[in-house]
Length: 246
Ligand code: PEP
Image 1 (cartoon, rainbow, N blue to C red):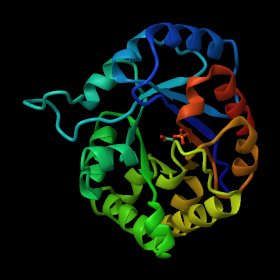
Image 2: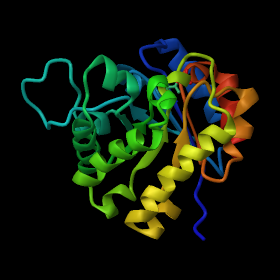
Image 3: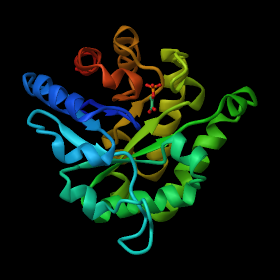
C-alpha cells in the first residue's frame, strides 16, 4: 500500500495584495510543514514576490499554447520562470466564465506537464447535475477527457481536485460522506486504468473548507487534502487547515 503525502493548496483567485504576499510568506516560513505539501496559488503577477521556503507556489491557469498572439494568457514556461511548481487547470470558474471544455482542460494539463509543472486538475458537478443523480457520469466524462490526452504515466504526475460547484464559495460544504462517495468513484476510475495509479494519485476536496470542517473531511479514506479558496486568504485559517491534513 503506497502512502500518499497529503496536500493543501490555496487558491487566492483574483484576491490579495503585495503586502498580503509578504506577510503570508513570513508567517508560512516559520512553520515546517513536514508531512503535508503546502501550495499557494496567487494571481500570477504576485508569484515572484513570494519567498517560499516551507511551501510551494502555483499558477491558477495556463495557456494550452507555448507563445504567440494570446492576449492576457500566461504560458507554462512563464509560470515556471516565476517560481511556480504547480498549476490549477479546469477550475469551475474557468470552465464557466471562460467556456473551457473538458478537452481544453486536458490539453492544459498536458502543457503543464511539458513544462514540469504539476497540474491540479479540477472536476466537479453543479447542483442540477447532482439533483439528477448524474454526478458519476459528469465527473467520469471530465476524467475520460483527461485520459484521452494523457497517458497513465502522465496522469500519475497530476493531482485531482474534486470541487462540487454548489459548495464553492457558498459556505455549503459537501458532507464528509458525500465527498468521500465521489472521491471513491474517482479512485475507482483511476484504478480502472491501473491499480497503482489509484494508490499513488492524490485527490483533494475543495468547496468551503474551513478550519472547523477540514479534519473531518480529510479523515475520509480517499480524501488526500484540500483545495482551499476563501479560507486560504486568512493566514491563520490556512495554516490550521494545513495542520488538519497531517
Ligand atoms: C475554490 O475556489 O477552489 C474553492 C474551493 O473555494 P472556497 O473554498 O471558497 O469554496
